[in-house]
Image (cartoon, one colour):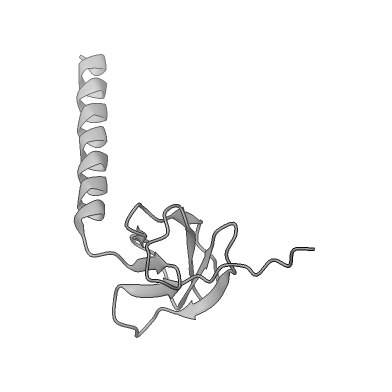
Length: 112
């Protein structure tokens, strides 16, 4: 009986996590990461920044969208980075209409 109850609880928990992920993917994005031409940047890393902590780095999807989900403190700023682009550090997030657009510029490389 205990095994059956454990399995039922595990299945309920797993399905609730999947439903949560589905709702998170469907909602309006918190961030849109684009290049100078307005083209979405896939797999850009974005980070929520609060007055006392930095969140984990999340990756943008194919549309350049990213969602932070719930945070115990209000997100004040966001940072973004991707190899080949100049990073954005602490761009204003709080009080800005969502989704916040982050524009990454390509790094300038001198060739000899």
